[in-house]
Image 1: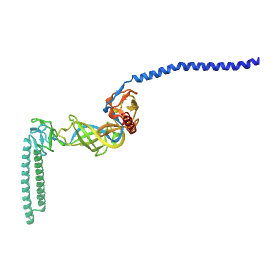
Image 2: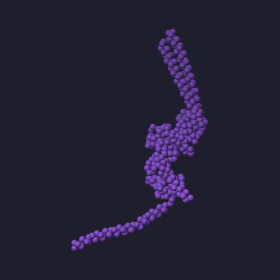
Image 3: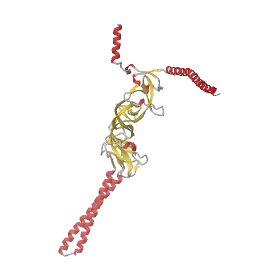
Amino acid sequence: MKSWLRWLLPLLALSIAAAFVGRAWQARKAAAPLAAASAAASAASAAALPTLELAAPDLLTAQRQLLTRGLEVSGSLKAVNSAFVKARLAAELKTLDVREGDSVRAGQVLGQLDATEFDWRLRQTDQQALAARAQLEIAQRQLTNNKALVAQGFISPTALETSVSSEAGAQATLQAALAAVELARKSRADAVLTAPIAGLVAQRLAQPGERVAVDTRILEIVDLSRLELEAAIAPQDLAALRVGARGRLVVDGSAESVPASVVRINPSAMAGSRSVTAYLAVAAHPSLRNGLFARGRIDLDQRSALTLPLSAVRSDQAQPYAILVRNGRAEHRMLTLGVRGQAGGVEVVEILQGLAEGDRVLAASAGLVPNGVALKLPAAALPAPAPAASAALLASASAAG
């Protein structure tokens, strides 16, 4: 019995091992057609993808260049020098000789308020001044006579003191009358409307025949020789902004840009938005007008960076990417972007991760190219053959000849 068991156990182990080997061979035999089918499907899928033929403008190159970081600004143009012509008197507006768009000089007479009342008031004060002068002369003669009488002992010194006081009172009355004359003369002069600055009439706010109150605005004059753009700057951009920074602006209604530079920065932030107003001096141009809206860019700083044209960065996925040309196929490469700026007049973006210098990517003109699509590069973009290979080709051609 023991001898039979001694032979039975090895035979049982051999049969179990043979069964495992057979099962593994059957599984491998069954998997071989599946692997072949998968390989065939992959080959068919690759063959199904069309080959995209590219033109030279469809290729862009990531390159290291000088990146100019800028700040986008916008706002309204405002004349540095502007003024309102106001009524200094309450009177009827008699004449107004200029209209919107007329050019005026500093000190030029622009209109006239009705000055009838002020003419009579000036005449009244003149007469009062004459009366005061006559009273002063009488007091002075009285004082001279009293001095002689006191010296002769005919009157007492107290009477002399009274004459001195009367003469001083007459003198003060005359000075007050003369001051009233000057005030009346000034009021008469204020009835004439004159231009405080040179410029163009922007608004005509009253018409002849209207009765205007004191400080009523009648005309607005602006000087277009000096214009500024008032731009609101966010707090995070304020640290990089400096007085003297230059930029260019495009004004609504004009196709050409005009140069501008930062001349002042407001020391206080606006209460609502917490933004700070920067003032940009704009070069004079015939098309510029007070109040026009303008937008542009201020150059902040420059640095060397790996850049790619902004148009080549795709944003139709969760993370920005570029379509890299790699081994003749399209490869979607995720990017880590830095600051935006300009280089050579083109809008570019700094590439922190995802591309190396010299990598070629597809431009936006190539469209949305799927990952893995075969690419046919233009002849100008193909690498030149190696010198050794060229020599071998020439040798084979000579031998064939």
